[in-house]
Image (cartoon, rainbow, N blue to C red; front, side, top):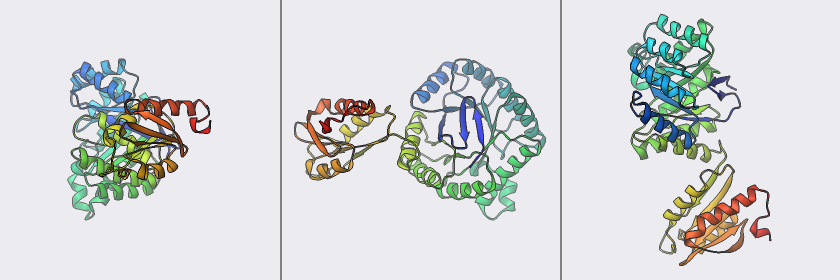
Length: 353
Ligand code: SF4
């Protein structure tokens, strides 16, 4: 089991739940916009937010941002070790440094000293795209080069008695990401941050992240995750939870839906989206099936905790495989919510009456 690292009030590692994090894409100097995005991420369930710090003006902004939010903040640093130090002094909860570009050992040691004084952890985040050329020259195997580059930085931090470390090895190639993390997990018990970096536009990023993160989590590798998608980061959070739910790593309501066919009697896609949105905030593990007609609807109803299958005028609702009744189309989602709320309160299921 990995060690526990505390980022603000959030624990990463050990037997703590897997932590979903994301990163703002507003200009950090625009305090208002960055805070808006942090709030949106928090509302979506993001537990830690990373913010780019590319100059001292960003550090000043970060100080103000930190005062206005309770979400733990991570300063994302490339190239300039002094920015890492001033971010720590500005009150961030973690810094991420990239071994590929942070530079000389003494600089990393300086960061470690200040981080240690402030009780701030460091994430060593190695990316295949920005790996130090020397590692690529030294190793024929790119994965070996990536993992060694991260582990050399980790060892350097350990050599100055700094132990508050999270490690990440990422590639834009999902298979490389899996292989690198499998290798990394054998070499360290520091918590591992998972993600496919520069994963691409929506569909590609979702597929790559689902494969790599899902696979690694099933292998019990990874303590925190970030799904990288070009564009609005709020989507990253919902996709991260969908992946974790799919591999049974977090609780949540699973909404399944039929693929639709000529027999479909209701707009399944629209209804399933509506149901998902309505039940999104409910913290329980249940399977809810949204089906287009009675043909497979009845079979799926037996397999799901709650099911609805479409008819011309609305839906037939089942609970625990037993028919509950007919519901008008507009009221289906809210009816399902009430049924689940009733179950959570320990009330009898409507089907048991
Ligand atoms: S549940 Fe009905 S509508 Fe949906 S795919 Fe099956 S047969 Fe078609």
